[in-house]
Image 1 (cartoon, one colour):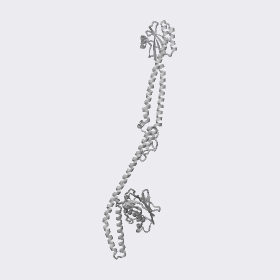
Image 2: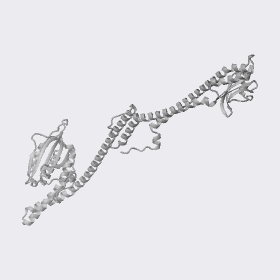
Image 3: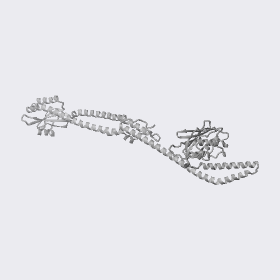
Image 4: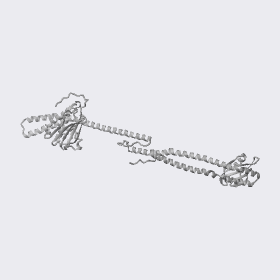
Length: 500
């Protein structure tokens, strides 16, 4: 089965990307901002520490320098400046008089601070001060310390400088390490989120999508067991319940369609039966009187003296009139419904009486009719005349098709009485078994059958709520099985009159 192709819009709306964008990215941004702010605080702390170091170094030599400056001892002044380089890491050191002119210098330092605001503030306030500035093209931090004479007056300034890079090398290294750790940590978090999403959610969601992809008419039931987190299990259960509801709804729709189809077929059949019934009634009414006249005249002519040839022709007329009368009678029987006259009737007695009578018919001469009807009663709710008519037609039809043997059996199956008739004739092709109960349809040659006998049987069974099945008999012929509903035990019994 092909997996659905994710479009760009679907990818950006995926749960995995949503987790990354809505949780991981903000978390990394906040952590990065926190690291940046923390590094700024660390940098400021480092700067303060370095300033304090320069201040301590300057204070350590400010006393000897002040004394040497008061005494005009340049040797002591030079040694004091050298000691600054030995005490701490500095870039340059200079001594200036109270007017800002350089008196002594070692390393890189200003030669004149008469225009330095920091120097003026230190001289004016007598407090230590400093600022970042350019000295010989190098960015340095310049620390000014006042040199105070014995009488308390400010007689000069000590300038100690340190490269700006010394302040930032450690912080820059810390920033690089912090950025590297933050980047690695971010990638690890994203990897863990993506992998964890697949393990905990993604694969279960993909499984649910595959289940939804398979759900279609006729395949609504979800067989897989729920898996994954509780929320996904709830979605799985909801999907299963929805599938069951869809399956039930589909079953109801199919049943409704089948019922509508059956009702439409019944309506069509009833309309067809009603139309044929009206035609049959009209035909019977219009042909009944002329046929009676013809038959009466034939009987009158048959009483007189006639040549053998004329008598044979007259006999043929009588046979054809009888055949036409039978066709009309079968038409009327086929479309006559008398459901209100049904009552408790013994199928054993009816079938036995039909067998005794049908053995005497010319059509059944030469055919052995075997009876396997048990003794006792087989009570059904039926109209006796219509029941007899159905039994006569189905047994007579078997006699006409049989080669030599017809077997009639009566048995009970799950609340139904089965009257089964087997013959050893040619049988009926399976393709024609659904059509043999249609009026005027016959498998015999033209002139040998009316096609109404089995139509009468089908009509009677519909009236009585039974059914008929056509199959093959063990002897290779046809098997006709009629099923009649058993007489209901709670049905109020009516007075039975047997005209047998």
